[in-house]
Image (cartoon, rainbow over all chains, first blue to last red; front, side, top):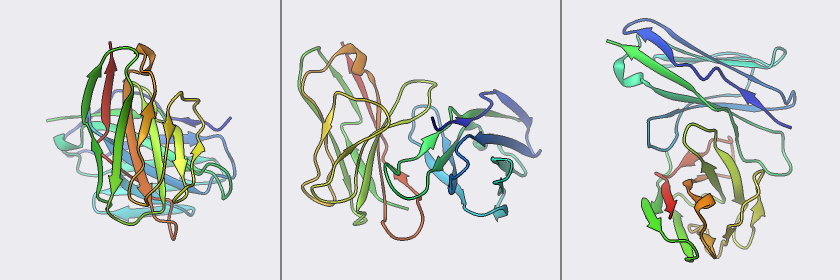
Length: 113
Length: 113
């Protein structure tokens, strides 16, 4: 059974600080990893994708992947109140079969002004 | 970013009614997906399609059915709605080439009374 685990939170971070969100996955052969942001009552919005070990930076966001530890994280620098949302970690299996995303339940992030 | 549309955005309907949730995308994406999300829970894949005349069931068993007669259109149908079908239904699409990045429509929030 494929699983993606996230701490549901809430994770409370002061405005301007770094928010660190973590995710572990059980399927060792997972190849693609994504972070989505979901505001309450809205649909998920893709904010980061990462495919190889290491760091990937995009603006205030940095995704980190460690396939050996089956661990992916998202750092949000200079956190803003508008970053308050649920962050969903998602992974895909290798080719073949259903290639839909497997999602974690998400981490609820609260940025305190 | 894909342009993907879902209608209706909200639907309240009585038990036993037949309903069709519409999903359309204008990016020419071959792959399309339907996910179901209950409040506070993770998204689950219920249907996917690799292209015209291709439909497959996802990881989560669903009484709904889908069709893919045109590339841009991927409707979901419930022949006889029940209160257990109350949920948010999210449509997504992606290109065959390149990454597994999926882009979501705004969702349909279905309530069956």
